[in-house]
Picture 1 (cartoon, rainbow, N blue to C red):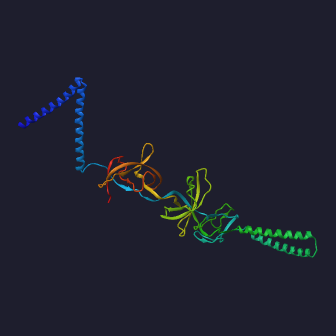
Picture 2 (cartoon, rainbow, N blue to C red):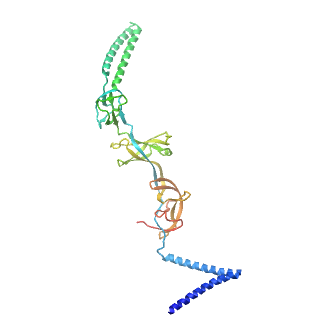
Picture 3 (cartoon, one colour):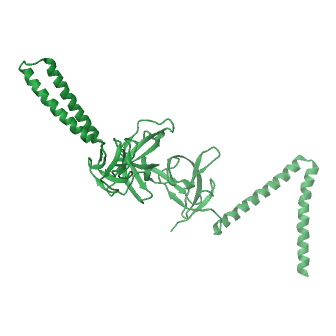
Amino acid sequence: MKYIYSLLIVTLLITSCGEGKKQSVEKAIESGNLETMRLKRAEIVAQQQQIASQLKQLDDKIAVLDTTKKVPLITTFKAKHEVFTHYLELQGSVNTKKLLVLYPEYSGILTKVYVKEGQSVNKGQTLAKIDDGGLNQQLAQAEIQTALSKTTFERQERLWNQKIGSEIQYLQAKSNYEAQAKAVNQIKQQLAKTVVRAPFSGTIDDVITDQGSVVGAGQTPLMRIVNLDDMYIETDVPESYITNVTVNKNVKVEFPVLGKSIDAKIRQAGNFINPANRTFKIEVAVPNKDKSIKPNLTAKLKINDYTNENALLIPLSIISENANGEQYIYVVNNKNGNNEGVAERVFIETGKTQGDVIEILSGINDGSEIVNEGARSVKDGQEVKILTLQ
């Protein structure tokens, strides 16, 4: 009971003091005396400063003793110079200069096909024969006529050399012999067209027309021949890369279907810009010793168009951008022995991108400690704690 009475007395005293202070401030205002109000204000300011000083002392002591203070946990990495190789990535298809569908030069019946699919052939080898339609008989008759005209010409020439006979007889014999010889050559050329020969060494990929079929000159496809030794990839390159994508540039070639990649070089770069799509063509030679690469196979090209021997690279994921389009990252300064420091926002200028990293042209130096994980959650000037990853 005594405890309750004591508590009531203390409460009344506190209330009375509060009311007294309130009344004293009100009385100072009601008095209208400027000096009285200034004195009262100075008294309150002194009390405020004393309270602020006491709060600071308490906060400093709490900061020392409180091991559970909440600061952002981050990871960092140090910027360092390294080689940066940029690749222009394109897609192309495999071609070969030696892929040809053979058409006949003579119309008639395809009497013989001497090869089959998958067979290797040599340049000049006979592949097929077309019925000559009586050209052989014409050739035999023409050769007989040529032999006779040759004999007549030779005799007339001997007489003319002996000043016997007329000049006109000699010239007629000569003209007749030359005409017959040309007729024979013409028939031989026609006969040669009835034989289909391999234009280069390779493999018969497909026999299109069967033996016994009627074929038309320049119209009926007979067979397809291919040589897989001289393969290349052709693709279009945007005109903006015309100074960087040049002959002998290194190229990494990947064939997704084959699961195979090779190193190659650009062997030809076009000198003509296509006005329709503003591109120029390039050719990349492809070695094909095992014959696994086929025409029209899809290939992915990575062309080395830029290299920096001393580049500073950072992940794309840590870069932020403000409303003005300026890019920035955070670095850690004032690091202490407890792996704590202060995050500072740094504006950067970026260069080329390759995969998930980007080249930094300005804004950071070699050795700068850059915020990695947590880069999106920290603020400029904020205290942070760096986690050490095992």
